[in-house]
Length: 221
Image (cartoon, rainbow, N blue to C red):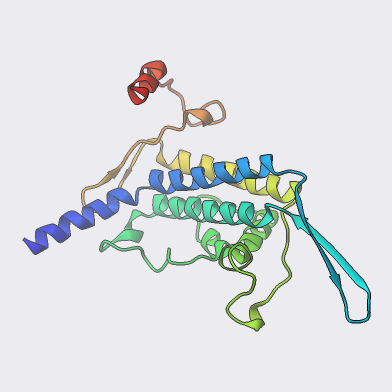
């Protein structure tokens, strides 16, 4: 009985770790980051510090820099892990995430991708976000003084780079999953359909016959 329960749990683990579910987390996090950034443009936190010699130091930072970068860091981590699982579903063998996936350094994770290669500017963004997620995005200091770094704030160009990288990885995940993927434990990852990307996806050749109005009514009722 216990073995049967474990077997069912392991299968459930595979089902819940499907690339499309990593994608939903990534999409929702990025969507909130976009909304926060759009609604808070032009808002800053200003600091004024009087030094012992009487001199005044002034500084300011964008009000939403930390949460927006944190959300994008978490979003891209989910997206990259979804891609890695798409490339190799056996990374969840035994009902647990492989150590290969138990990494939060986005540069290291991205270098493990085989189906897509990132350029230097994309890796720079991931390097920035790798500092934000465990440090600047959550706490004023890291675990030790030796790990302290200057904080880099959100800007229009950094935001645009985050958004562009998300879209590129999103399209790659769609490409790998639109026909479904066989996974261990008899699980098959579902055929993923991201209709908002169909106009740009050259690998989608058939139109989706779907009653969108009826679909919405089903959920609104």
